[in-house]
Length: 216
Image 1 (tube, rainbow, N blue to C red):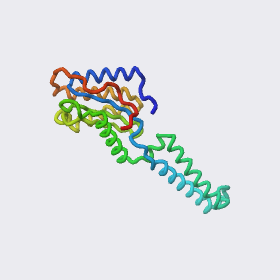
Image 2 (cartoon, one colour):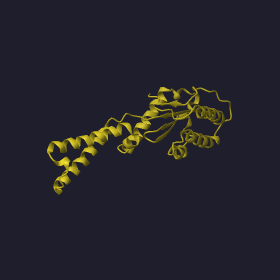
Image 3 (cartoon, rainbow, N blue to C red):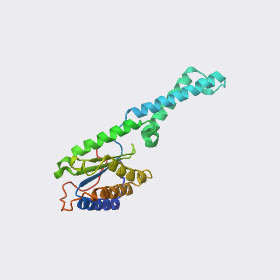
Image 4 (cartoon, rainbow, N blue to C red):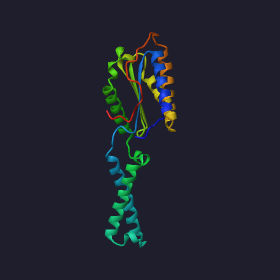
């Protein structure tokens, strides 16, 4: 994936993560990925749509007797239909915005959550003492934000609170401000956890640095 943030933004976020960890007794990992699955079916969906629309237009031209050159023979008609379908499939591969039109919202949510859970395990966030690790994942293609806290935070961070954090991240993310989106999420996360923070010194138990583009 293309680098989502520059070095200055990464440094600023790493420092902010360290502050949040010290202030509210958690271990935070930020991750941003291009996509959570290859979605091999999307080009086929685009092909089917393009071919169907092209076939419909050619059939209508025939019915209306327009004498369109593409309707001069069945061979030309079939070739034109397949060519339009293939073009749509190609655009789907190279243009994420177009491919996203064929992505089911439920599928996007499921794949993003599964990716987050796999990343949580592969990075061993569960190994944090008192089980206070929390993963904040942004997936650019799916346009999904997953906040995944460990069991030690179940009483400190309700589902409603998690949705508040996600909402704070989603707004700047919609305009491509990834660093600002993470910053807003960290601010809200810190304020929500501050009321139950112990104030005791916290050891940094997880590697620093934002995860970018990793496949679990």
